[in-house]
Length: 375
Ligand SMILES: C=CCOC(=O)Nc1nc2cc3[nH]c(NC)nc3cc2c(=O)[nH]1
Image (spheres, rainbow, N blue to C red):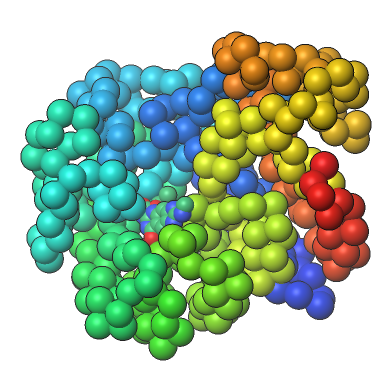
C-alpha cells in the first residue's frame, strides 16, 4: 500500500509539523503520544477511558504478549484488538528492547536474540521473521522491525556492531512483512548507532534505502544526558524522509515532547504518565507535584484548575492524597486518568499551535507557565 502518512502543516521557524497517519484501524493525527499498554491493558483504564482521554493509538509489547498469554490465546480473537476490546490503532514493539532489558541470559547472534523468559525461565529464540509473524498475528497497525538497542554509554565498535545487526534484521523483517502481510499494516524501521552521528547517518541511510512506512530513532532515553538525546535527535531526524512519520521510542517528559516535536519528531511513547501516576507523581502545566506531600492534605482544589479531565472535574488534591496514602485502588485509576489526559492534551495543543502557525508562542508559554518549584 502507498505509505500512509501525509504532512498537513509545517512550522516556519522550527522543524515542527502536523501530519495524518492512515492506518487499518483508523487515522492518527500527529504529533501523537501513545499510551503504553504492555500486557494488553493501559494499567487501570478501560478502552472507553482511553478514548475519553483523547488516546488515538496505543502501544502493545510483543515480548510480553508472546510469553503471556501467548499467541495461541490472542489468535482466538484474530488479534489484540478484539482480545482487549480496543478498536483503534495499535503499535507493537518488536520485542527487541524488552528482550535486552527484561529477559535473562540473552545472546545475540545474526540469527536472532535467544533468551530466557523472565517469567518461567523457558528458553526462546526471537528472530526477525518470528517477531514480524507475532506482530502480524496481533493484527498490529504499526509493526516494528526487530532491532538491537544498546545501552549508554557504548563503545563506537559496539554501536557499529549493533547497527549492522539491526540493518541486516531490518531487511529480513521487510521481506517477511511483504510476504506474510501483503504490506497491509505499516512497518517501521528503527535507526540505531548509539550517540555517534556518523553511525546514525549510516543507519538512517541504510534503512531509508529499504523504504519503510515510517522510521523510529532507537537507542535513546537509555540513560544518556537529556541534551545529548536532543542533539542526537536533532542530527538524525533530518536524515530521514520528510514524508514519513518519525517516532522517538521511550520518550519522554512533557519538555521532551515539546523539544523533540520542535526538532521534527511526530510520534512518542513513554511509561512516564502511567507509571508515575502509580507512584503519586502528577503532571500539570506548572510542573509536577507529588500527591503524597503533606501540603495537599487539606487542599480542596483539583490537581490543576485548568485541567478538564474527569479527575480534576470531580476530586480534590486532599481526596487524591487520602486515596494514595491509603493505597486505595482508585488512587491509581484517578492519577492515571489525569496524567494521560495531560500528555494527550499537550500533544493536541501542539497540533493546534503548529496548524495555526503559533508553535513558538506555544513553546514560550509552555515554559512560562512552569513554576520553579513544581506545581
Ligand atoms: C516500542 C517501540 C518499538 O521498539 C522496539 O521494538 N525496539 C526498541 N524499543 C525501544 C524502547 C525504548 N524505551 C526507551 N526508554 C524508556 N528507550 C528505548 C529504545 C528502544 C529501542 O532502541 N528499540
